[in-house]
Length: 351
Image (cartoon, rainbow, N blue to C red; front, top):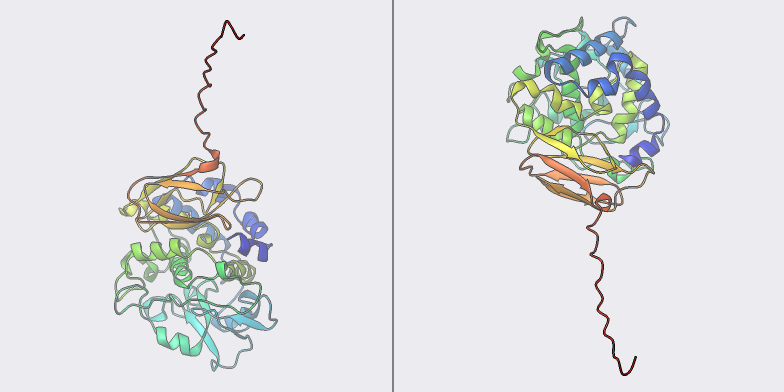
């Protein structure tokens, strides 16, 4: 959100410096399906330095203090799943431990690269981690749903930046697939045969369905905590999570897999971020900003149910029924009023 970027001003410069050449945003946004997966997978293979720098599972204990730092409390970190702030000092797992978002038992063993990836293995209060276990994420009975309302008690984390950890979990699982998986014959040197997300759906996998994963990703967009740790994780191991930087790329990765999508068209001067080209029936959340930094006073959306908060520029789209058009009401020129017609009556006696 705008407030998130305002609170963390280094983010955009770090983001732009990472995606260059064939990996620049204007190149990635033109790709979809296997081609997009291959391009991102190649970028991750080229920039992830976990092995080259000799980093392992033990190093994570002392790196979180920088990567997951609480912006207003020195020496504290923000915990996964509940947003709790606690001391970063390692106490052998009494307060917090290292949560494998993609469980070790399902392919992310701590002794392999995927199992000690900073982007995926997160600091979590020990009691919270225990309640999750290795249960697959999802909304149905028997799945783990990190939908707890998050509240971080300091001024850098404003309400609009928070939400839940549904989107965070979805983006980590997508990241693991993009880095360590294979699609359309594309795979890098970090390939792990257990990271094949399409084969890891259902209660015995890592997510209920691809559709639920993408729904969480779209409806709970990247928060300030994710932005902070994306930069920190890059400093630690060399690579970023592209789905935090450019959430709109997620659906495009799966376009060759037969998911039902709807196109999104903008017909206004405002910039929409994330700039979705496609969506699912569950819609998405995005922010609309004019060139001068203001937000459109009013908008109209066809092809979906929506709400719009003009003070934040926050657009929430749901119940998509067809291809969508988003237009700025103020930018639509009204029909001109017809010229008035006058009748002159002349009174010969009175002038």
